[in-house]
Image (cartoon, rainbow, N blue to C red; front, side, top):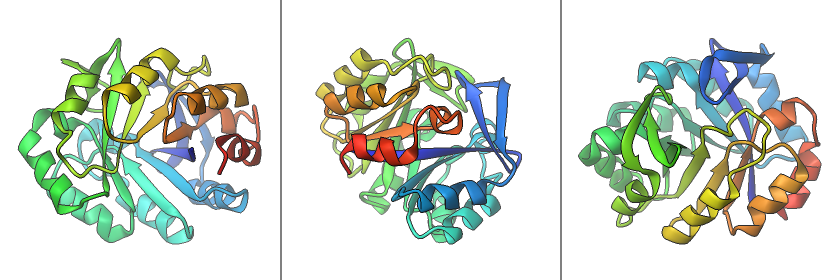
Length: 238
């Protein structure tokens, strides 16, 4: 199972939110480039980036910071947040991002999402952020009436790299992942599924691995030093 240490960007800083609430922010570091470099020094072979400002505004507000991070590390970086047009996706790929996580576009402009997935086979990840099983969009501000599983199945004919499945209620809370919901998603779709939200211990990572998940995104637990990145990588079996 792949381990994806997370760097959430807001205002050029490395932060974490609780349950996607922009009013519940903790700043962990003023230098996200240094954070990325430390992750790689400690064994990370990939990094998960989120542009929180971009997710809220629907644009590439922190593309300069993202570009600096990508250039500073010799590992693949995937990015989510604010990718709501073909042009924005192309810009990020030109910056050197390996994969893009796209969520709102898949709900609001399906044909544009399909065009993007076919233009960049194996490089687009469907981001499904769920609140009570329903997909949330636009930086988790709006909740749709669509079930996450139904959205995933709708795009099964596309050459997607994976699905990142986030339980918003668990994200940033350190309350543990929603294993039942994760297992249902994994059993319902053909794509590799990367789990996100709630990881607080190495036992949680063990549980995620037991579901057959392809990957696990870890954020706050690393910043709070609940376990080391090196130990998390070992648990994933990399």
